[in-house]
Length: 121
Length: 107
Image 1 (cartoon, chains in turn yellow, orange):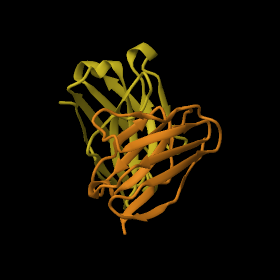
Image 2: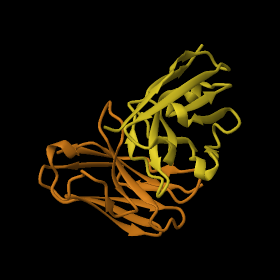
Image 3: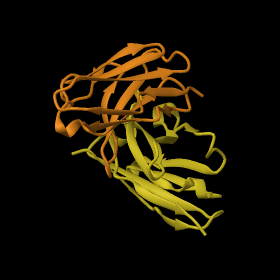
């Protein structure tokens, strides 16, 4: 069974940092891209960033709203991707999802249940 | 960035109805479009990718069409479990972007 599980969310003050983790199982983790998508309460889906696979040199892309503050990394030996979030703002408050995105087309096939990030003083 | 505009934003329909949701892109994206369904408190679920390819396990009452800048998601005969919010996503350009969503409710 394919599973994607996020963790690491919580309450943090503005300007603070948080590191989210995404662990995958039941599929060839190292072949896939991993996307992060967030959803603020009652709002739509907001793409955060992508980390590609080894074949694509683990390259990353980010939404303009998080570029320079968020950093993606991955450890294929642990089937894990990490989202390091620095200089957090209140507008980063959202449910953060990670998803498996096959390299062949890049759509988000399998999603986790999300981890809540709340930025508030 | 490529903007995706879905219409309508809200749709009220009955079980058995045929419904169509449109997604328009601000510039051409070939067939690099996916559709997702999201129910309250749940993660999105992939329905269709490459504009018209049905994801494995998705009922055949769902279909997608279009290319370039205009795309449609059609549900041929609404079932009770189809009442949800639907999002389109373009996969042609970074940053990837989503439409604002279409909320489908029971009439």
